[in-house]
Image (tube, rainbow over all chains, first blue to last red; front, side, top):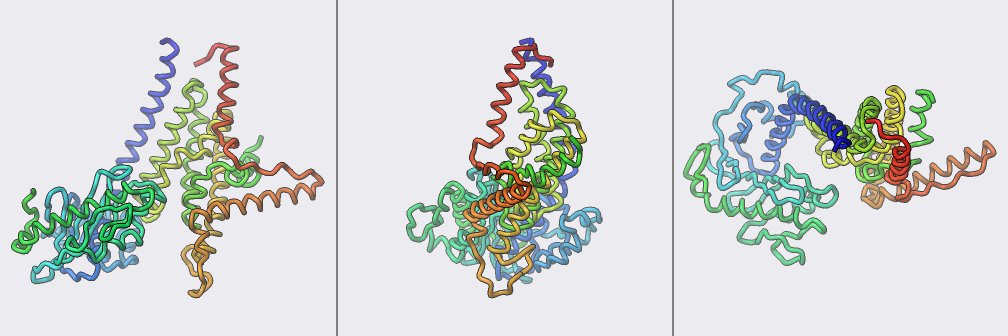
Length: 249
Length: 238
């Protein structure tokens, strides 16, 4: 016991100092990280709604209202990298330092929540529904959380998808963001496709990535559930206009 | 033992990747382009310098029995700092390297330098060693990345080199290409070394054996035994 004390003390002291240092760095970087992550998701909404010319804005983003302004959204929508860099630098620092005016903040939001997932409803200027961008996720990835954005047109067909957050194994599970894998979803709807993972190449199913079936499921299953939810709540959305939160399940 | 000597040995004579054959996991995994290789190298350099610095300062206070977990805490903290800072301020680069950054913790080179060098040398020499080793690591990763990017993608720093008709040698940026080009680099190093020795009239050196026996863990078990026998002789000073 006597010998253990100095050992335990040394380890505790080092861990405490390290924890203190990390806490300080975390404080400083927390806001820029959140801003960058939000901007990525705004861009993801636009990229999965490929070919849909919508007039409303996905901002404010659920859970994050403070960081994005119209200028940035327009630049992100136009995928104008130069403009984006001009506004926010590589990292949005310049943007964070400039005050957000009330005018720049968009108050109307077309985000709905069904079940666990958020849906952005893309509308034209008259308010007619053009499509949906669903933010679906799973906790069942190989290393936890996997978040995916799916673009769905009004007929329920998948028009785009992008994995926005994951910690899957590099080179194996990380292939869920490869174009070849994503291609499997595009153009399919619940009527024509099962959105189930197959390891044996059955038709109308998603082929599992070799060695990464769990990662494949963590993308595919939420997309299926997301499609089912939007199918169920379609009419509800069509009948309402710019109501922030729909009825949860 | 001079500062410049400790610094320059990492660049060539004891280059971590090409001479010591350490830290191959990142060297193989991220070197698909010059920028990825250099960024990974610089991130590792930062961690290496900082951990060497801290370890050389605290080595005297840490009981020998818990030194490895202590070093790992130090290293892991700096890796987390790099991860957070890159996530916040270099977002696009972080998106590409993000999955590999946590792996710096288990990079053999870093724990190896803490154990083999920083814990036995003073602050200034440890910084020089970390900087040299880190830049040598960056150099190796950068050149490997550059060659693979040029051949496998026809670009360097995303600039087209050979015009649009160039058919990329795709293998170079796929995982097997990493092994093949690392092998060629090692062969080249051996060749240069033996030519140098010939000119000096020395016998050619033993070729590098790139097997697991060279990994730092072996050295550590030897060291552990040595330490234990020392402890038996003299009671431990905490």
